[in-house]
Each structure stands twice: as structure tokens, then as C-alpha cells.
Image (spheres, rainbow, N blue to C red):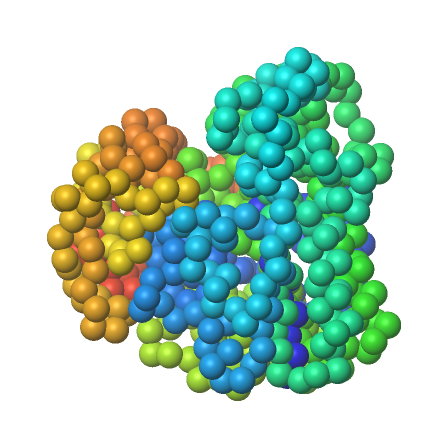
Length: 510
């Protein structure tokens, strides 16, 4: 078997025509849907970026034990398991989080990897004295900062060196992926992962992709929403959404290049193709931008998934309603190549689901460390929050004490103790490190002083929605019987995950 796995970041499925989009043109995602099985009820697991990738690589949920961090010594990683079984695997990515402290163990699980530079705050280009007066006029005040090490500064400098379409990191990712196929498509037993940070913010796309998405905004560059409530003027909101549309169009064009290659070389007959994202993105829905700070609404949690399997080409164009989740990708990758899954895996291979729309789970649990535990049965979504997010009993369980961009501080580690083992740590105890509002361990996004800090998580109401009758999750539902059923399923899934004892107390569960 040969497999191409395409992973986008922050791709809102409602921006894709196969999922009903009407404002963004995505003809190549339509082409993909015609060749694939499209999954309609596919959900996230752990949030955001690197927690989602840990779930994808290991087939397990991580958000009840750990915030943003590396793969652990006891984790099962599908590329590593494939490599051990003789399946060559290669990663091409511009997702720079892999090269930070909190992602440093992921890319090393592949037989080889290629890193494309320049996305977001990637510390790429060195410019000691940038022309700040010119640049200050160029960018909107909400996304300008000239302090060294700042998100915006790094991006502003990088952007000076991304001038033509060929310079854009996502374009280079697909260039490198096609180069791998030129070299290796006639070989057997390999997996290629093409992973691009796009359409993650900032929504920086070549100007040609904006022509179909005009706005009345007339001001400096504005393509980086804040992780905050919507307070922008209407024309600024339109500009941000137009730039997101443009970068989705760029992603669609790159996907089209890959589909053209499949067509030209008849790869549909012997190569599997899997296309998905880590999570979605709010573009003003529920009066919020971005993700994580607010409840895990379906714009973030219900994500796209397409799978083409050459042995089931007759299923092309079909859709599946059964509930699936990101943790299912790992066992699916192993199954595609005939590799047995380890006992610690919680996910379920989707190969049988490609054959027919068969139920594989009662419910899916998902969330971000320090925030709500969320559950869906495919129809109802239930967000259950701790009574007091700022004073909750919560710990990090890890043998790799790293945040996204830093190590755990010694004064924090002085409070650590050994705990476990959990049933997934293969007999190894782990560090149990308190999460505190004024401690770097509190970073639900992996960064200091974030998730447990006062006011980071907002709209923290425990609430139930019926997405069959209320698809936009605007009308909270009062149905104690449904809540009781979902609560029982939540407890069952937490037990399966060997959640720490305090997790049950945090959510008022028995």
C-alpha cells in the first residue's frame, strides 16, 4: 500500500463546498469528494494544534492528562510503528510548532522529514534593524509589534521575504510533496504526509486569490484575528473573512495540484489519500474569533475528513454519517499498511466504515486541557465545565516537561511528584505537576499564564445543544434525560482513557 496524508490547519469545514459552503470557491475539494468517502460527523479530540497531533499520532486522547507538549517516551506513534514494520514514511511540513520545545519529538518519528520555513511566528529570517517606520504604516495596529521575540514581529520580518506565489510556505510544501512522488511513486510500502499550516492565521495569501473575495475595507494589512470576542468594525470583519477565504482558496489550489498528479499518474488505483485538519476556526460565529478560549462549538469541533481507498473505489462519492474522531486516524494508517495496533489505542480504524456506514462508537469526548470536557453522540453536544476554572484541581502528567516554546521552570518542577503509572504509560510513572493560574504549567495552549489565568476561558456555561434542530448551536436545550445519558457516556470514556481521579471531581462526576 501507498498512502498520501494531507493535513491542513484550522480548516473550517463550512468553508468547503462539499460541506455546503456557498461563499468560497473550492472546486478541488469537490473533486476530492467525488473520488473519496466524505465523513460528515468527524470530530476533534484534544485541542489545539500539538495536542491534536498527539492524538493523531497515538490514537489516544491527551487533554485530560496534559496540555501542549511533546510525544512522551511511552506514546505509540503511527509513523514510528509503520517504519518498524518496513513502511517508509516521510513528512513535509511548514508547521513550525514541530521545531519548538513542545513539538520536538514528533517529526523525529518519521524516517525522513523536510521543514519549510516562514509561517506565522517562525523565527526564520534575521533582520537586526527592520525598517519599522515603513512597516508600522503597512500593518493594522492590532497586528503590529516591533519587540524582539514577539509573534507579530517575527511574521512581519518573514513576510518581507515572501513576495511571489512560489515563496509561500504552503506552495513549497506541495512542491516538496510532489518531488517525493516523482522520486518514489513507483516504489511500494510508503506513507507521505504533506502538512501545511494554512489556512491558520495570519491569512496571508497571494493577492491573486483575493480577486473573488472583495471587501469595502480600506486600510493597512488586516489578516490576523485576535483570539478574542468580535469588536471590530463591520468592514474590518469583512476584510478578515475575505482574507480567510483567499487562503482557503490557496489551499484548494494546492490540493488541486496533488489531484492533478494522481490523475496524470493513475495513482487512484494503488494509493490511498487521506485529507483532513486538526480543528476548525471561528470567523465571528458566536461573536468570537479563532478557537479554545470559547466553548468548542462545531465550527471548531466538527471537522472535514475525506478518505480514498483504492480497494474501495466503488464507494467514491459516498458520505458517512457515523461518528468518527481524530484518534481514529492512527489505527486507520496502521490498518492501511497491515500493521497491528497497540493495546493502548482508543481510536478505531475507519477501513470498515469506508465499506459501509456502520456505527463504531456511541460518543466522542473532546476538549482542551483546563477547560470543559465536551461530548457528542453525533446529534447532541454537551459542554461540561468545572464550577471554578480559576481554582480547579488540575495537574500535568508528563515525562517531557516542555511547553510550546519553553521548558518547565525549576521552581515549578520543585512541586512535582511521581504518579501512576497510568494504563497507557507501559509501567512508567510520570511527573505530576500542579497547574496554577500564575505558573507556566497553566498554559492550556502550552504557553505561560494562559488557560488558568483569570478570564482566559469565557462563556463557561455547562450547556446542551441539539444540532439536528439547532445546527448553529444557538439555543441551549433543557433535557435532563439526554444530559444524564451523555454524562454516563462521558464517565465511560474517561475510564477508557484512564483519566486522573481529580478529573472526575473537577467536572462533578462520580
